[in-house]
Length: 563
Image (cartoon, rainbow, N blue to C red; front, side):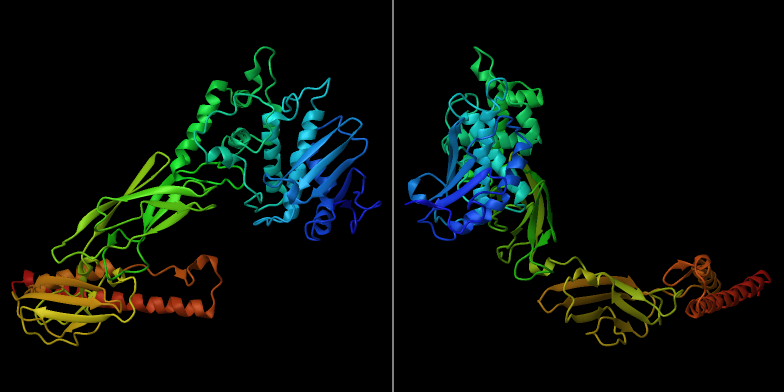
């Protein structure tokens, strides 16, 4: 095994343009994980370093021999994909990157390698800023320590968010999940140590910093600037809870409990594991509201799209999130006990298949309950028999005479269904009309309307019924009961008709299609034709009303003369 620069650009080979970095790789690596991967990383190294230095100045960071970056075979490491660094003063600065040939899913290997360099170089800068004459609380005594280790991992996540937008994974197991998915989730942030391992301590620290960043909304600059410096004789003063205190003004003693209570409430251990592929579970989400296409349910037939309960969350989920459901009567309306919401999603739909019920079933209100993170929402569904799914159909009567008095004897009427839109699917509707109470001459009974040519004598009680079925077999029913009326006395009828026609007389529409005010549009031939048509219609109404008024005038005069 030997390191090589074969196939790499630069002069000499493997050096970046400023000579700050020198890359090589083990000659046992495949081209994809050796030459090609290094070639993909090299052009970004200098810019990535400048981005990192915008957070940590590293005023002493000037390695005499440059930064040597070695890409290794995986066989030399047993922990997850990663990197290490070493070097100080005259000791060469070396970064060892272990990717080997391990499959990486969901993110390009070059992005993972760049992130690992960010992790390692950030730790160098922390130490560099902690040299004599400077103050940087993020580096431990012998190494970066658990505080610096956590911060370096947060740098890596921030790098991916800003430089690889849309990425949803770091490409390997997150350190946060080591603490998140393992009981008892105890306090690992209130003590500083030289622990830099892939373990619960650094998982807790990393997730706590993501809590400050993603949940509480503090920027990375703010977090770095408020790093807690240890007070002599008071070692806990330099821990992460004091970073929380400096940022929020709340007691450091509240830090872990606020953090762990929020985690336990939204991500209980019993519903895990969570994975946290981007080392965060924040910001947390909560139940917002419930909705549905229809609150009336049945079995065997439907009225539109499949019935579902829509659960809306306040924010998109960050990791797979378990929501709990229950039904007040699972024998009628069963629901799954849990529903797993995959990120990033702020809503999901629960199917609502109703269990067929026996003949004695007449209907029931079933309450569905949704619970998550201490909040409970409920929704009431009315389960009915298939024949009762639709509301009653509303039958209305129409006459060709707009001012005619409905339901008078010898009157011709047309009966229609006013709310046929209750059928979501109105394809191939079939109709069945019937009339009870009298034998009357009717039109066809299998059409959308029923025509009665002449109502029977006054006092006759009639029942008009209709049944409508769509192609899915859904049936609705409607009934209209009325008693045939006797005609009014001639003068009373004349007064009624005049009042009706006066009520329907309106000013001409002052708008020309497409509904632009006449004053705001230059007339066109089409608009003039439209206005003249409206005028003719109004003139006909006025002429008709004038005739009715003249007849009323004559009738009243005759009544006054005693004729």
